[in-house]
Length: 326
Figure 1 (tube, rainbow, N blue to C red):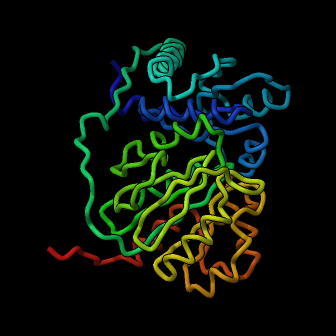
Figure 2 (figure 1 turned 90 degrees about the vertical axis):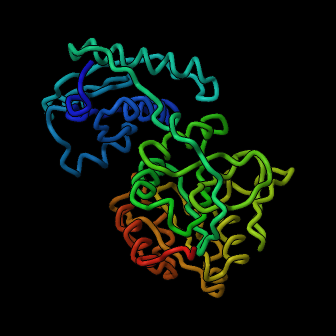
């Protein structure tokens, strides 16, 4: 079996126009230890070309492979290119999903001439515990296209021991949303789950808004699941949840709008400013899709913007020296 260092030295990039497929690739490859440069649609890849992509990568490509894409890959001197893969099952179907991941790794390892990697769920050996520590801030994160990569970097650089309760609203397919917690918590100590019943905000835990039902937060820290669908163009509604959390938590709310299409999150910014809530955004140049954070920045109400790492560092700076009293 190859060593962890050997696997980490292999840089992989995925090109697929199907979002659920990109998430499945990202999940399986990162869990196996590969250095995943990113999983992009062909449109997102056009943006990434403006950055300097490394040479010698492994390219995993979903058809169609256009002449332009082939020329792009050839120009980056690929170590290996594989084209065409089976569609990944829904992550809710655990055994089928794991079988697809093993098939992907087997094909990749065989093509690289290396022994099969046994992917293990490192979190399965960790005993989870329910945090009872109080939160100082509610951290509301709104995201859409390009969001998973940004959210992952952000959470990787914030300790779940900080006094933060996290609520995420991410535009997503109603089935594939259940694969998001696994992606966001890989190789860090955050707990993460999609909301399926009314519950409470907790430090060290990321709650993800469901796609088909509205939620509302109250002043007691409860997240209440409502028996009605989201209103408006987007599900879940970042506009709705950002206003709700701002109205309830005021200056104890830090709202951050990450990569995404459209302008969800920009509808109630005057009220949010009056509530003295913190409002930040991902920098457009670091976003897979810049229109959503750009709309917040252009509003004039955004107090800070930066890369996911810079946003995480801002949080760490705000809470530097914080200690729970024994």
